[in-house]
Length: 346
Ligand SMILES: Cc1ncc(COP(=O)(O)O)c(C=O)c1O
Image 1: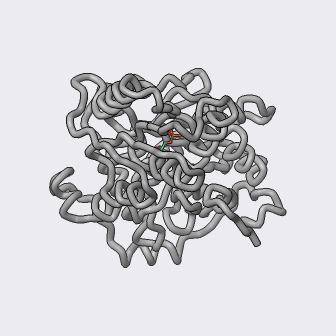
Image 2: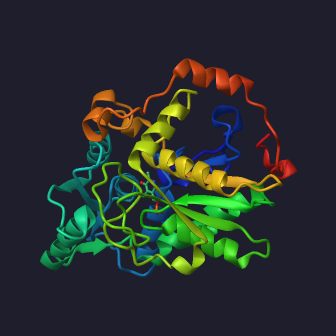
C-alpha cells in the first residue's frame, strides 16, 4: 500500500494495455498518466527540480520559470506548490483551458503567448518570453526542459529500465517526440543493452524536430517549431510523421473501446500502426508504445465534434462505436512474446 506525503512521490510505472483486442495491433501501451500530475512529465519535472536544488541554483528566493505546452507546467506547478516555490509557466494558445486552470489552482502564474514567431512558431515565441523574464529579474530560474540533461536522464533511469524489466524480448519501442527527453533517455538506455531494440520516434506533421517543414499544429505535447538541443538523431532508428487527423482518429477509436487518452497517445499509436504495417515480418514482434497522458484534458479539443470540424474540416474522422466494440470482442489474440512471468501484466 503506497502511503505518501508529497504528490510527486507516487507514480504508476507498471501499467500496460494490450492493444490487440481493441485495435488489432500488436502493441503494448505503457500508460504514464496515472500520477498526481497526470502525465509522464512528472518524471522530468522531479528530476530537473532535484538537480537544481542539489546544485544550489534553486533557493527559497527563486521563482521557477519554464516554457511548456502544458503537462510539464502542471507537474512543476504541483512540485513547486508542494515545496513552497513560486512558479511561472509560459505557454501558448494551444494549451488546453483545463491544463491552464490546473496550474493556476496550484498557485502557478501562467503567461500565454498568442503570437507565434515567424520562423520558430509558438515555441520560439515562448522561449523569447522566458529569456526576457530571466533578463528582467535575477530570481527567475529557468530549468530549460529542451536542453536540460536531467530531462532525458529521468527516463534513462526510470521509464526505459521499467520497460526492459517487463519486456525482456522487446523488439521495437515507439516514443513520441516533444523535447525528446523521453526518446533520448529510452534510446540511450537500450543502446547500452546487448539485445538490439529498434527505437522509432513518432512526431506530428508540421514539426521540425526531424527536419520536416514547419506547418501549423494544434494538438499540444508532440512536435516543436525549433529542434530541441537534447536530440541526438544517431540514437533514433526510424521516424514516423503523423498527420493530426490520424491522431484524432486513433484517439477516437480507443475512446470507443473505453480508453480515453491524450492527443499524443493517438499520434504515437497511429505512427506505430503505420510503422508495423510497413515492416511486417514473418515472426511476431514485441512492440511497446509510450502513452504520455490521459484524455480529460482534451475534452474541448480532440474529443469535441465542433472543434475537430472547425480545425480539420468535414473529413471522416469519426468512429462507428458499435462496430469498434464488436471488433474488440471478436479479435483473436496471438501472443508474440510474453512479458516476464513475474511482471503481473497477465
Ligand atoms: C502529452 C505529451 N506527450 C508527449 C510529450 C513529449 O515528451 P518529451 O518532452 O519527453 O519529448 C509531452 C511533452 O510535454 C506531452 O505533454
